[in-house]
Length: 112
Image (cartoon, rainbow, N blue to C red; front, side, top):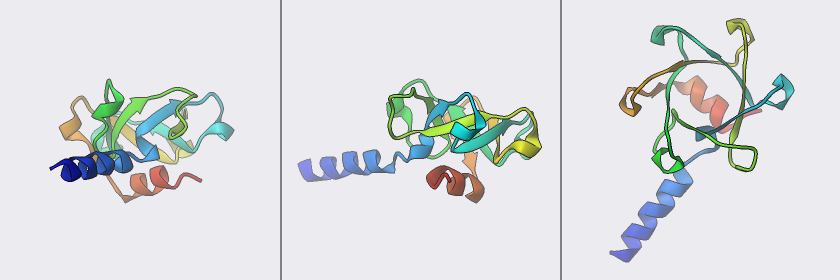
């Protein structure tokens, strides 16, 4: 029983990729990914939901705003125009509405 619990906890910790803790940066050169917030879900590469606590990050697309002290984070820069963005994002209200595509997974797990 204890081994199963330990394995479950480790899987949860390992499953939290860099993509889920978000830190907003001030300049484009500091960013791992440049994002643009769209008005409609059909325009987006990903539909994401902001969560209140870090422990609520259970799958890709759930974002928690971290700070500069979180070492395992994704630095994002919010652009003004859609053509400047690497990723187009639509914000949803509930975690069950989150949808991500391959482009989102690729950009957020291996930001370059």
